[in-house]
Length: 288
Ligand code: G1P
Image 1 (cartoon, rainbow, N blue to C red):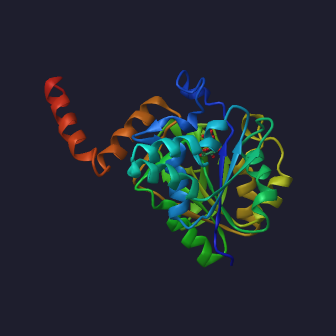
Image 2: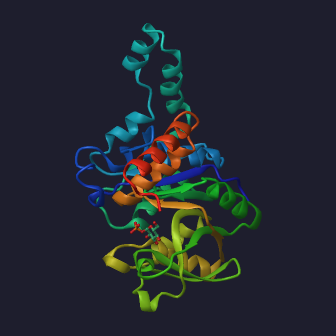
């Protein structure tokens, strides 16, 4: 099968869960450690082999396009002041991948957002990364791409989530690695398992035809999960389990924890941060 070169990043949401931080700044541009959250996600897609990134955006998301574009005035200023290191950082952003923006127009659900990317993606397998979901380590997508390229089947990421929180996710019934069924945001009592779908997917083009056939699902929206169910029944879908650090950065506590975990792995911030955290725990008397 064709190599996976295209990543779709749905980024049209209003970010209401992250207010007030996301009122005037798109939530995807809120900083994680030292860069906007969306940059981590684009770098993850590039590390998995993607060379083209399709951002599905809405109004007010211009800052995302600017972040991955050339910035002539800034570059001229950095050049004039001899700040070569920063100049390289800024220029590299425009060279990371071919970034294509498509507009969703109106928010009709995740399934609709992915469908909007179809004319750009074409008849090829592709990855989908939900920018709220952050993983540490971030090699999950690379493993999923390898899985789909080897099997020819779509691959979805899953993780065990205990308790009622499972009803905030898509939930998969799985036999071995094979997905038998998926349900979007079931009631806790009705969940077919404790395996939640996470925001990383690798799809064959069959998902687009499936998206054309679904109706309004959970929350009255066109749900990606409902299209995955059709592909699982007709073509087969595999599940890739993830067991590392998973953060839903649309949630304030998770966003804060993701900052701490990612910063601890940062080459220059990590060491000093560990010392400061240990000091904080001692000063506040938090140690057990
Ligand atoms: C979306 C998907 C859901 C998935 C989740 C992962 O839900 O619809 O199936 O489990 O992402 O984070 P959302 O978080 O957009 O409500």
